[in-house]
Length: 360
Ligand SMILES: Cc1cc2nc3c(=O)[nH]c(=O)nc-3n(C[C@H](O)[C@H](O)[C@H](O)COP(=O)(O)OP(=O)(O)OC[C@H]3O[C@@H](n4cnc5c(N)ncnc54)[C@H](O)[C@@H]3O)c2cc1C
Image 1 (tube, rainbow, N blue to C red):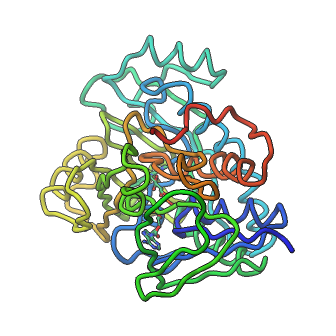
Image 2: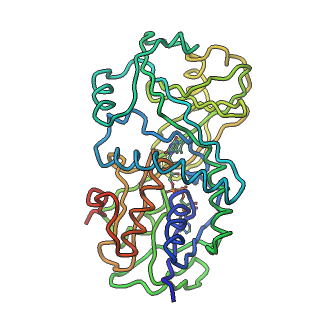
Image 3: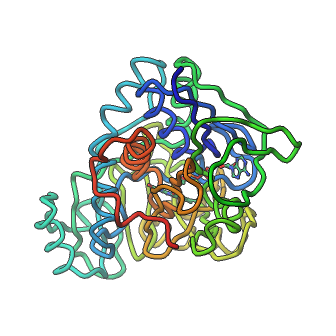
């Protein structure tokens, strides 16, 4: 009999983990409180912008960079496979990103050299955007994006087609105790048995683990995004001082995002709407007066230094963690899923997992 693995949470991290495990011949069940590939109360994956690159990677440590770069490299094959096997186009495109000043040019260029990532000095005006901090921008042609709701929809279909059980509207209770986990109890009292278990519950992971991994630091960090339909869209992503704009293939334009420490509150706010629209209009004055056609939020699984936990649980021998990807879970998910699947199946992970150990 093949190994049965229960995955707790059906966001991008849970779904990609399921894909990896199914590919290794495991029997897989995803247990999801809400509905996979939709957003009910703040789940992060549907809400993300879909930039497959860290915002200013030179601000992060090497472990974060290795994981995000691995994800960036794995996406084209995954998206192609999803398209071939589900018919759903995830809109992966290498449209590049323009970084507007102020930013640390020396650090940026050194990082691009060290990681062999193409970078060119560029004029913001030549890209058709306003740059209140000066015209000398940095053009990163290798940055890609994908469309998270489409990725989630495609993953869901692929998992269904490949025999993964999706147990939705089913909420798991927090874990207690040590040793080995035989069954994980749901809030309605059902006991779900498996050989191994993985926590991929995003911002809610610490709630499930606080009795058994009290040093794990994961907390919700809300992000809000606005959606416009400009008359003439950008052709590239643009970043300025923590704010970014992402043009989609169908002419829509995302403007985001906020970074708010407000607990598990998935509300959207007028204040964020005003702040984000002012930032968007400063870069693209033609947005002034246009309606905001959608405004949403998501709760990121926030962690110190953006370091996820991808590891065996320190006390429960058949429990694993794949959580806390904070601002870059969409980018990191493919590499992270490969690491945790290797740990579960007793293989050597393709990246050294030591930096992602669960704190004890
Ligand atoms: C505004 C915004 C913009 C972003 N932009 C980007 C970007 O451009 N690029 C990038 O790489 N990343 C981006 N991110 C970050 C990215 O979205 C997250 O890091 C990633 O989605 C986390 O995935 P996850 O699967 O861990 O969490 P989630 O998607 O939140 O999934 C966790 C799942 O677990 C379920 N769950 C929780 N508790 C239980 C329970 N007790 N029982 C059963 N199920 C449970 C939840 O319902 C949820 O579906 C952005 C995030 C936000 C909010």
